[in-house]
Length: 494
Ligand code: NAD
Image (cartoon, rainbow, N blue to C red):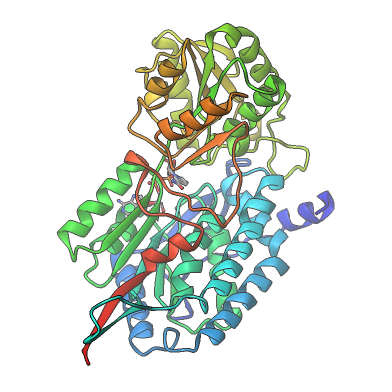
């Protein structure tokens, strides 16, 4: 990956993007289009189809037809595996093109995007390609006069609604296991990050995925997403995004066919640093990276820093120093550490959180403002706010931006109480050299993952999912397959 190749790719004109329904590029039923704004400079990058409810229904019908005639589900596992591997090959072959297109659309710094987007997506698809012919049914240990065989069947039509922060990575977390198990899928990318995911859908067809098996409809969540949620013909809905939308999806399900709904929602993840941390310098550096990468637009971002009072001032100063060293700027510049905020709406929301934190007594140690406004893009300085009380808005609500709230604690008990004082439970970390304390904290902190003396870790073999209002079900690992299968028992009298 070199700067001149990136520059050449960014200079390319982005063609208009239509829906993909039954293997064909299809315009919106009313011809509607919407502008795609680049967060890099606020200009219009291209236009894409502004879907209607009728478009979503057509995509669902195509997916249903493909499922019912077995053109994918009926293929031998080895054949499905071959197609998925070929798809991963194509994603790898087009990695830089996909990454640059995605960055122009969503603003993630390219260094991160290349790994976290096409790199991760290809790896995920390969993982499930390899898994699909290693999943067996079961024979239950019943009494000897019967035979109870438990089959694992695809669910049918899966609806997948994807957010804007990592469209390829999160898209693949849903598409990989759903397609591996033989389902048909209808995809709804986010308004502000559709382009690279739509290109990835195109590559799936190039790899030999039969038409109708993977359909994608762009447009507004409130229109096409709602139509998907209310459909009587979607069997399972998988979603990553905000709690507010997740709540709506559950309502849609209740109002329609009671489809299964799996939600990967937000977080307010606590990073708990004790004075006995093995290496406070490293802890400060990781604490900054854990909130500021991708401008804080990471579901597991460590957005709350809880620091033992005895080291508070010195540790906060070290975190602020690390934050200031992260260069904010053009996400397609290889030197950039923090790219653009995804949209103007998101930037305004981030700044609103900074204001409310100050109103509630917080002190800004560094950042707190928009930067590089002259570019027309949406950039924000990494921001550290101290004196955040556990009940403050900044401590309770997800910002999804580069804003770190710091709270001091006096004891392990208090640290646990504060760590668990939100409705969320996605991720967390503890920094200590006391082994007993590390294990106690792992048990006590309510979260899908608790790190010890580190933060992050992107291995596809571990499940990702939230406790509390961070969601239900899991992406990644073999556990993700459970969402995309139905168990069926054959009960046979012998
Ligand atoms: P969002 O909920 O607004 O949008 C997510 C998706 O839902 C988009 O595709 C959008 O078009 C669609 N949508 C919006 N309204 C809808 C409706 N009424 N019906 C159906 N679909 C609708 O969230 P966002 O702004 O894209 O993403 C930010 C949020 O997502 C943050 O809260 C973040 O924490 C969360 N997130 C969670 C994870 C995770 O793994 N848990 C990962 C990434 C992001």
